[in-house]
Image (cartoon, rainbow, N blue to C red; front, side, top):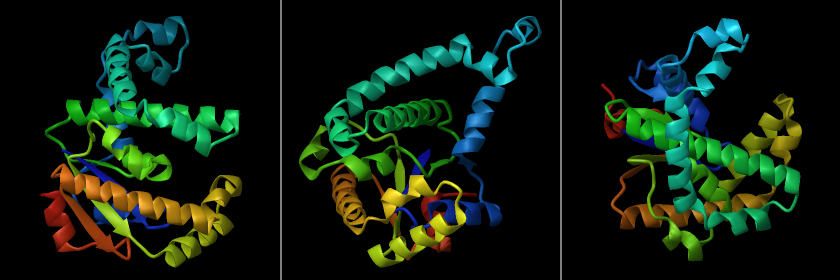
Length: 230
């Protein structure tokens, strides 16, 4: 089962996932399922010594991974192709846009692979496809989404003021201030908030269950029950 955490920057997605782990909840985060997948890939171990490739590189050469990746990219292109002009309009800088698209394709492709390969496990994504959609989607385009990868969605709801305050605090501590600077725009946060509302309306129409965590970062028994973690 795939569960995606979505919310404004600064809403506390990462913090809440850490809290779930601290409460001994039984699930796999994105990084954990990533490591599990590649640890169990069949790969030609002789290449490690013969070609002096790092182990991770060798695993990337695995036929199994390349096959999974090819299939997932075809599915991703079919599902998210309509986003291309929206992303181009939203990120004028070509270099920055190329980096973002590469990141988006990688995350959505791996999310597609993992959600189908590990159906018997609880997988939690905090930077998945919905988080990307929240930035670039427009209400008039939402009907073009063919299918979501998430089975359930946890929405971290905070006010624009609280989100902005948390982002600024994070900027002061982070060495990557430039990457966070654009998130401090109240106008951009308002757009993301409106897009999130549109996504929730669409999830309701498609009967995809979602759970709203008011204030963000708040662990509760109700949340644990929603995720169905043993």
